Amino acid sequence: MDMSNPQGNAPGFDVFLSHNSKDKDFMQKVKEDLAILEVKAWLDVDEMPPGTTFQQAIEKGLKESRTVAVFIGQEGMGAWQNAEMEAAINQRLNGGKPVIPVLLPGGPEISELPLFLQNYIVVDFRKGLDNTIELKRLGWAITGKKPVQPEPLPGKAPEPSSSSLDGDDEEQDSTVQRALEYFQESFESVNSVNITFFIGQGISHSGINSVISPQKISRELMKTLHLIEQDYNQLLPAIDTSSAYYAMSKSDSSLENAVANQLQAAPDDNLPVYQKLSNLLALVGKRKPRRGQHISPQVVVTSNFDLLLERCLLRAGLSFTRLVQYRASPKIDINEYKNVRILQNGEISVDCSGGPAMLANLGDKSTLDELITNCNRQTLSNAKEFGVSPFLSLSSLSSPIIYKINGSCDVSNSCIMTIDQHLDFIWHQSKQSLIPDQINEIIKNTPILFIGSRILDPDFRLGYLALLQEETKSKNYDRYALLAKPKDGDLSDCGYHMLSKCWVPIKKKALERYEIDIIDVSNEKFLELLRQKLAGVIER
Image (cartoon, one colour):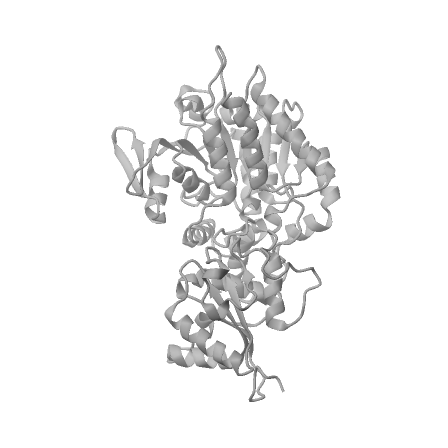
């Protein structure tokens, strides 16, 4: 007889997810990931019918679950969670259910756990819920089926997920060094230039659950249209396809609102890669031109709709300018964040033209986003205004310049998601020159570093066709892309499967067709190495 179920009745669930209610957003992700491993999880919000008391539901859930996973995050243990854990511990002592301690992002050290949990080997998600190694360890603890993949030793920190794994062969090391030396030489050259950064939507495969990746957006759109079930865990279409279905079923504006709501409802976390990029941009901002030398504005092109980059730059105390491209008209929104200051009371102050400074609480996402949307906002709707005319002189704006080529979730009628929207943008660009001439000129005359850009993703193809295809014919500077070889990832992501199975030909095609050298190294590591390399030039 299964001692975890002494009555002999087959449990209806593989695991009971005990958690603090403040960690609810994390738990939905955990449940969805466990479903991919064919693990059926009991989660209170999904299993409590109307008319049931919380205590009744908890008792029933514990009874019907074969194991209990106790999740502990930044907020510690919840009141009901303590009762759940005590019941699970008692059953464990009586030869019953296995108890599995699980640390969430922001969770405590093992030594800080309640004493009766310190004796158990933990599952450690403190580096992010997208850590597939730890997910498989959790599945092993629940099902008793050991994964084929080797596991880290008990007590040893898990290896980072694919977004932070580095290649370790000689070819990879030589590519990293070659790229670092190239960027250093570009900074030291007579025609001193900045580096143009291209940030793709692949940046969201970061190991941080709060970041809404294109795949997560696609999943929610398909669920809303009832094209997949809530527990669907198979391959999903790319966002350009799923969003096209949604727009045809409803409307472009409904699609934009649905995606904006997903992005704005997500928890607020700084991506480590954005923190590294902010440090690098702060260093580059200290650069002084030599006598008679002109340095072009620093440009960061991003295809992401969310506001994570803007929030991170403001929290770093950096002044900058944001350009938001509209999807099918010669129209751009401009926000300049001038003289950004972090105040002692935890607020941020940004100068406003012709008025008092705008203030926002750095810990309050809503007020910070309101500042991002409205600060020094102006809209240029005449194509001539953002060509080479004085109406928009990038050199006069606060640098760096963040150019959101795919639009932004806080600007209506700007986001480019569907296949049709992508094609419309390319067509209008060829006829009306939607993209500012100065942006094109800077990109043409600077080296380029792609971050989070997967060459099979639709946002990369749009950026390439709109900004780089013609420049490839007369390319003046080299292009590099940070893209670590996939070792684990979202199993519903077609792009992940294609990259992992066709890595060598994809690297070869990137160089042949797009003239981009792939650097098999984590984003964070390379940006830190680059900062150290350029510091020797700038602070000399």
